Image (cartoon, rainbow, N blue to C red):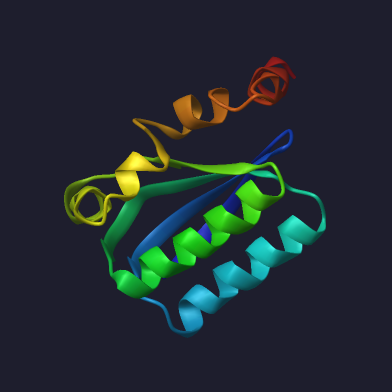
Length: 123
């Protein structure tokens, strides 16, 4: 699994690609997440558009990130869930405790600091 990172003001977006199955590939995302958290980032959007599959290890990573952010007053929003990823969020009841949006733009705009996206687009 790979990811590309994008920033909209105070909001970081992780565009994921591939399978979220734990292991060394996922470790790079966890490492980057911890770096951003240490730097004060509190708002994260995870884009699942190009995610093919997620398993219990992947869900565990998401819950750990979610817990870390919420303990500091932040949050994670999810975008573009489809097929197997949407089904896994439903089966594990994650959809009842997280915010899921149709697009990255809607997820970014939903944060309290949502003016960050507008400010970036105005430039």
